[in-house]
Length: 436
Image 1 (cartoon, rainbow, N blue to C red):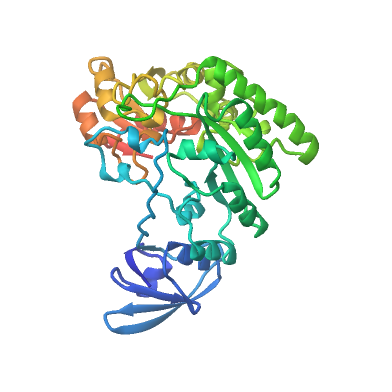
Image 2: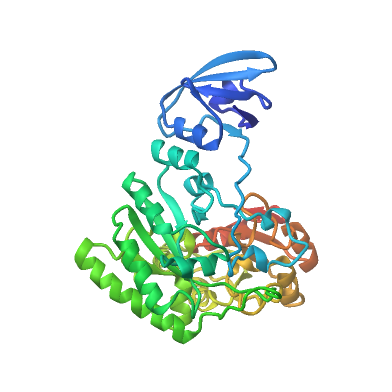
């Protein structure tokens, strides 16, 4: 049984008389214990809901299209916590004073199934495994890092069972896995990386993709294990290794299977592959193939863009994406007549090794842009903000940023279409802060 915390106005649930505070007991006679149960049963066309209101059970019937939502928001499960002490854990590299939710180390298979969160599989009990395999909670997203047990123990900072038998068990139960390897030079690169990719490939097609991403290091690493950042040479070797595997896997399985993160190509100074080389983009949310998709979409936008009645605008990003963004905004300026400037923000909050847009803070934006905008409106990509509210990692709000910089701010989708639509909305005028 889970609580109902919101009913969308005008939705099927609203029309059926469901209220905030009701408890959802069953749907189609299946007990609803958490968000996973709820979303899985929603796929049915006909729903019979048992609602507990005060001390009374109410039965409600909803008829709907298969893919339609009924308009309920239910309580979110508290995530299971991670007991590992990973040497590269980003939570351990955060300063004090940020949002409380940023310090949560979740390790929950339900989050992996629902949202694509990566888990190490180190806290699964027999009941968890039974539910995953019985209910076919697939795909799951797994942080492997290394299949050699001692190396993996070193990376996770504790002794854990060998992961490979567990991967064999899950894939044998027809659970699809997307795996990631956080590359730490001198620990799980070179021969260890070869072994990890080779062993994971034995479980294809249930292991459906493997991503290799560079370790991310902030300046807050006092009293943490010493780690090396991925250098240009490290990244070049990694990309070359992956390319060898891709050629082999294409011959054996007609898929590349393993992919390097975009950031690895940028560090290596190697050209990003074409979008089709990322196949069905299985790990785009993990930063694999984003640049290729951006380039493809940019060409579509440039064909469609018309003149916009707006003098100028500024868009912000991280240093790693600036060269790519510059190419696009220069072309978009020619198409729209809007003089667009792309500005990379120095990440003094987390340190100079952190160059991605998603970790730029409001404090750094104020520091970089104060006195620079000269009244020009500012486009802020949504990846800089918390997913469900206009708030940066350091807890600064978009409203506070607009006040500090004395400019109009538009939060836009982090894509070529998002930028174009943001410019169009700026030209239309209206509210001081708009989220699209």
